Amino acid sequence: AKIPQFTFGTNVQITQKGSDFIFRSCPPGPPFENTLVDYLVQKGYTKYAIIGDNGAYGKGEAQYQIDALKRHNLEPLAYEQHGADDKDFSGQLTKIIAAKPEVLLLASSEVAAGLVAKQARQLGFEGILAGGQPMATPKFIETAGCDAANGVIFTAGYPGNDANEQTKKFAAAYKARWGEIAETHGANVYDLMQVFFIAAEKANPLTPENVAIEMHKVSGYQGLQGVMNITKEGESLAKTLLGEIKNCTQTYF
Image (cartoon, rainbow, N blue to C red; front, side, top):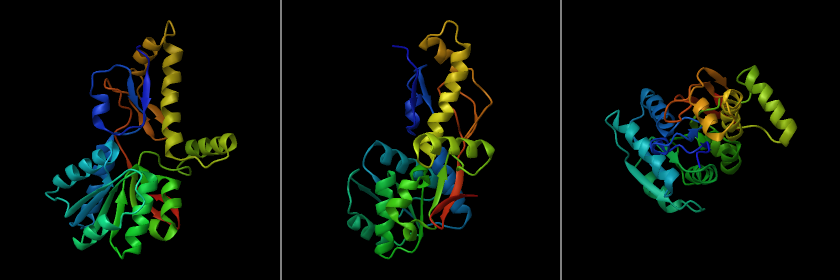
């Protein structure tokens, strides 16, 4: 149909199928996990475990975490999976805690990861909890509770609503329109839609195919998540930010 398609999926293969019409609105998975593991290794942590869902997202992020550890000649002491809709993770966490990791890497969605964090603390895990984009959302904190969420290290594409004047303006408009606090999902969609508008203004005639062609030409657009340069494959961003949850709020390094 030659219609531009936008995705927030992080699997690297999404943009490697040869399509001229797929565009990613956030960084792919490896920049989230590489940035996270590099930081933790630099802090001196060498013992890691991983828990993630058994769906495409969880398996993908867990593999990126394993690959990131390999870059430092490390491998996880334990890797446990769970169903995407599971609510009880005590079996997996008991095995993980027995392996005595210093860091538990989370590769699950916002709700599941929040429950994992909460239950890990309840079971006595005292190490570092860390993960990618889902941990940078209010839903993760809401699910985990402040006590379990505080101290969690995360990587994110969006620097937060208070990062600069651009994000503050976006957050205010988002709150006024939707009555909710803006976070990464709204920000990344907003960014790629701005790229779409730039392309639509230049497409002549205005057809979906021409819009896609012009989107690939967009370079240097300052989005909420950073400078967006659309590649031949449809990637838009390649870097992520580090943060830590403090006082029940995401803060950024």
